[in-house]
Length: 253
Image 1 (cartoon, one colour):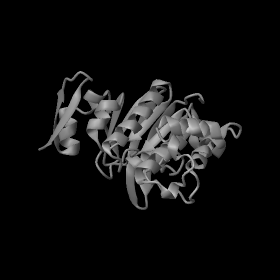
Image 2: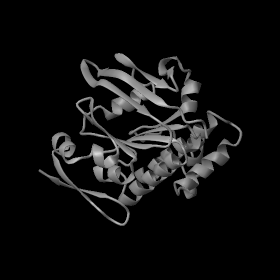
Image 3: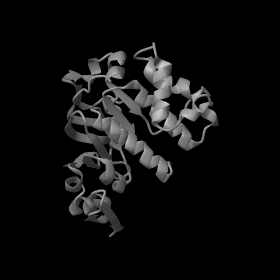
Image 4: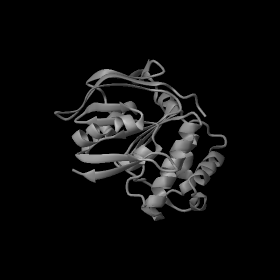
């Protein structure tokens, strides 16, 4: 696994067209954390992730990896440091699943890329899909293949934009269990999520965004406290004890 870079964002402003979508965001992310980025639709979550990947140019502020400004990193250096799982699960060509996954491994290390790809497919319980064309897979199967491509890269920082969207409950749990395991092994994972109950269950830290700004940032129960749930999401929440740890229950106000 590549060394896990420290991500630092300082005073970040982002626009899409004439609309400002991220406003004066600053945060620091260290190794070994699974961070859930949550907020209502249009809060700025996707834009923030895309800026970290270098897909959006900031209007102001900086994104740094281990102190180096992201804008001066080469594409190869950026790919070695981070891996990105976008919302859009489209694959342009009907390649066998193992070849799609090997793209994640092969950019960094051509020797053994197929073996690493197969190991990543097995990690997401999709080894049987290796020789099937991705266009022939269901949406859930394709999501596992694309997650495997990210895992095959072994990048220190994983950025996942709505990685459980459209998946059935079993698929959602599998994805978050694998991302949690990667964080436990020393990688850093930032995942945007809409399901606050899943964020509460799996995240080490929650960052709440609303109207482009960070409204809360901290341990799960602290970030998703009753006032944040009420003001940002229009929900009432209760934390209940269970054998597996605290569980967040939500109701509409």
